[in-house]
Image (cartoon, rainbow, N blue to C red; front, side, top):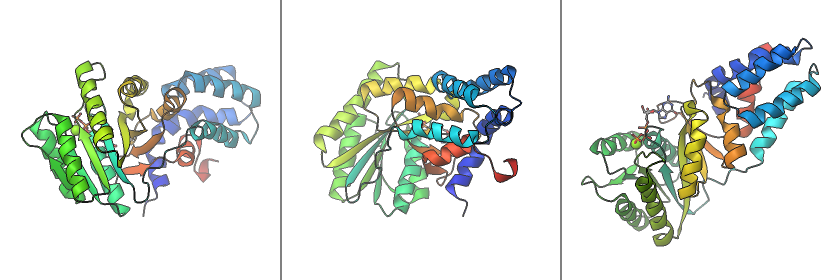
Amino acid sequence: MYSSFKRLFNSLSKTREAIRVVLKDVLSKRISSADINELEFLLLGADIGVKTTDDIIQWLKNHKGKNWLRRSLETYLLTILESIPITQQTEENARTVYLIVGVNGTGKTTSAAKLGYYLKKKDQSVMLIGADTYRAAAIEQLEKWSNLAGLKLICNREGGDPSSVVYDGLVAAKARNFQCAIIDTAGRLHTYKNLMFEVEKMYRVIQTKFPEFILHTYLTLDANLGQNSLIQAREFNKHVPLNGIILTKMDGTAKGGIVFPIYREMKIPVTFIGLGEDLDDFIEFNPQQYVKSIVGSNNEDE
Ligand SMILES: Nc1nc2c(ncn2[C@@H]2O[C@H](COP(=O)(O)OP(=O)(O)OP(=O)(O)O)[C@@H](O)[C@H]2O)c(=O)[nH]1
Ligand SMILES: [Mg+2]
């Protein structure tokens, strides 16, 4: 089977190519200040962020031409990602609720299904809860996914208050002894206060009425949005504490460096990565594999 590293490596080809063009010169002694300027431009373009880019440039100026440079660059980037541990995603025998929140179209529904499928493959019993009560199409979409993934779905076709759907769903999950419940919520712009208070309410209902469940709140971010997604993360985190980020649409993006500013500025770990539109296009975030996919190279280029 196609390894998750290979999939990630291939998905990040555009981000890597952008960085590699100049990295090649940096690794040789031919580096000029024009090259450094270009690298700076490319790193910023890959959304690695100003702080990390400045650090990398300074560091490269000090070490250019040394053949251990690529390895050191990898080590340096890894230290940023390892400074924030990924909280354990699936505690043995613990009941867990995953509350999936995010801006419209960032991939909540798809990720809820993919996460359910991922957990099911790890022998967890999973229930999906459709709390996007605003559109009938939202329930239909989740229903399609639940059938494909073979997951139980609880929803309310009559619309209604998302928090009461969450409540009913978790009562059912508890009664039927499901280990995991994954809640798909409606898309919301972080600037709409009422919708943000609605997320707070769902969070509160879970916390106060279902303390026996471990609660993970995950924010979906579209990797193509680059720096914009930082604003989304910051705003959502003001309303509900985020445990992790599901970075979607990493397949084919040239902005795959966004993980660094998320770590440096938000201190929230990326927990999963979406690599396509199928159920299987979903991998756990692995810092080593990610860094290798960004600045590493396959053997023929070494
Ligand atoms: N290429 C790619 N497409 C994705 C990925 N994740 C989601 N999508 C696509 O993005 C679009 C939006 O995904 P949804 O899961 O419906 O997003 P959502 O956040 O639930 O949207 P709303 O409920 O409308 O806010 C769909 O066409 C998905 O197939 C991914 O990792 N890669
Ligand atoms: Mg949706």
